Length: 356
Image 1 (cartoon, helix red, strand yellow):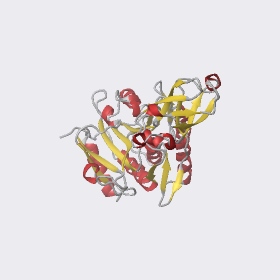
Image 2 (tube, rainbow, N blue to C red; image 1 turned 45 degrees about the vertical axis):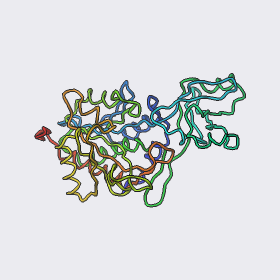
Image 3 (cartoon, one colour; image 1 turned 60 degrees about the vertical axis):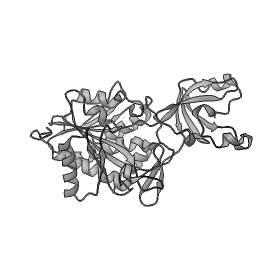
Image 4 (tube, helix red, strand yellow; image 1 turned 180 degrees about the horizontal axis):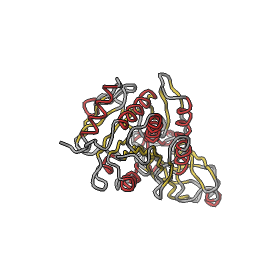
């Protein structure tokens, strides 16, 4: 299992607020941990954080996990002091009703609660309608606009105010598992690679802006500057073992069933086979996800960076995605890190990533 020190770091990382475009707090936490073992640690102008082992090795392998989470941004403060917000990333507004919000204000955290007209005051037809973002507001306890603006400003970002929790059966719950768990796993794989490195230069990257990044975000920037020959993207995928999940559409990826290896149009078949073979050799349980088109992850941007990068996607089953209570199995996280470290050790200058 994951060492207790790694779990403590993971919880600190998950609890750090960092929606897309405002990732500096979790990025600092990630870099501080990386400095305890990595040869070189740095950041870049896009907010990405990079840690590497064997900097003179070859080829270069990029391990990508995006560190941003979905959030909210203040768009308007009305005369009564209520803040009206817009989404950072993809929200189901029903999830927000009644939640507490933690804004990152200029002078520190500002806490608020999401307000909505009480059900007692709704007409019958309105009770049946789903809430829209425009139906909601945030109450920070201010008496008027002037008082609110002393603490909160237009453009201030926020996240749901919830903390990581341990659950039975080695499960962990947090609002920011998508995809801070990927940024954690990239660094954990690098830590394991560092204990027994191979020939490759391996760079773990906590990338930014994935939740808003139809343009490729921080991952595209990193792929351009690192010029990797191979990349493994680590993200989450929908767990199939909760009520109402359709396995015919999602595949069968239960919590505790191990890493999910994506196979499909954008995935380099050589890297996929390396991952599958290593998992079989190490007796690491895994499932396979089929992707006939894009993957809606950083793999979509990385695989076409520069002259092209041999890219694979490894996912961790996640329940209740984009909610305050996403859930993963720590066994899946540990197995994913171990598998990736093992594959990195097998890569050398003679590894041919050309699809045949």
